[in-house]
Image (cartoon, rainbow, N blue to C red; front, side, top):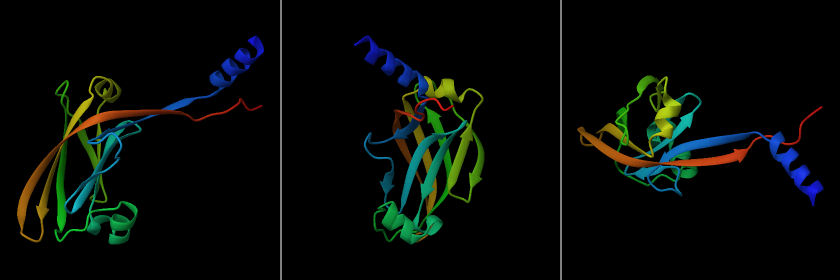
Length: 156
């Protein structure tokens, strides 16, 4: 029995772990599907990445087939994204917008901010190109952590 416990300890200490952190409206769903667009929110390295997906920014095949986007007559153009951590009222700095569809936010204290906040408000501003109307939508998301091993036995 001691031998088995020893092997288990050596095996677990040889593994490294990674914690994937995302914020979701529904714990089981990675994406928030709306009429004409989809959003996602996850930690990416030293930042927080808000993905905005429309049939026009990602292509209809990817949007409807891979992401399972809702069929819609709306033609949505996302114009801005803002974030607010509800438990501490912290905000992040928008570092860059990638390809007009991925909003990358940073902060020197991101790890602490994420650890102290289970809830995040994401504010999406967009134009409905069909009607020309500017709209804003707020989502309150809850942090989801998933830790998994990334290594195996030590290599020689």
